[in-house]
Length: 390
Image 1: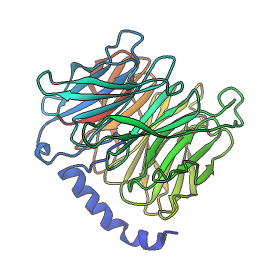
Image 2: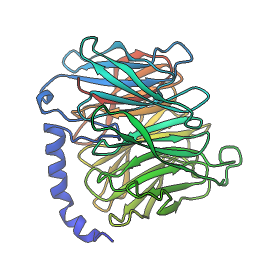
Image 3: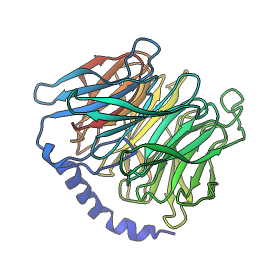
């Protein structure tokens, strides 16, 4: 196990390093879709973002947005890639390859190549018949594998990415079974998220239906869970956030509107529970379901989105990984399905599925707190938003 006392003693040093990273050039997080890095753009006042959507109500696919910090303007630069329901995206470090969880009734994974002449991504490959309900995609840190999660058929599929042409081919598949306490939402297994840890050694797959986090070693031929981490009955875990430089993992639980905090055993991938915090205040009643979770690149703050009350919950992260509540901020839209932090950390973009908007919150990089802005654009049924530098 990790010596947490030693980690606590060096935490302040890590915070200093983390602040230098976020202020100079945010670290690459391939497959986790937070903030990509580019030293040449460090002083630019412009940030760009990709938006994934559901295409049944008029969306054309993947859109490109731009924030001009000097003018305080958010612009929709139009569709940059097509496809059927590119609901979640992952992009290569050099941003020449875009991968999407796609499909209508059936799940598929799509690969796009950047076209320098058009300034858009061309659809190059689609692997269909990959189950039902693809809702998440991620790339491992060295960009040799991709993983999709299927909500409908409770599957995780792992694909190899070719070194020459980035073509994708299936490597592993696993289908989970089971159910849990919520009879309506947990009547069977529902895989919702799969992504590698920062080292790329372990793949973590989250099953909302069985209240489990499954841990895999994708280097092995025998693709079965090394560990099954059980959460509280009825939690409905949805997504994970990995601390950028300490062995801590955070699960946002959709059905109980909570966050579970774990310490990671970096040797075998197992997770040990440390804390569980509620996201809602007693006065925040109604139909509320948590969605996305992100950590600032300096490792000091955690953000969690809750649909229904339509707010981002802000927490500070202590040296022992535990969370302390700081703020509850309106997302200025309806049904925040996803959000991301800008490269500089000064803005948070929120994809509001039901109001068909991308809204922008200003972020204080020192305190982590958020405030409203007037920046907003309309996009039909947005489901993903992530940083992009081209």
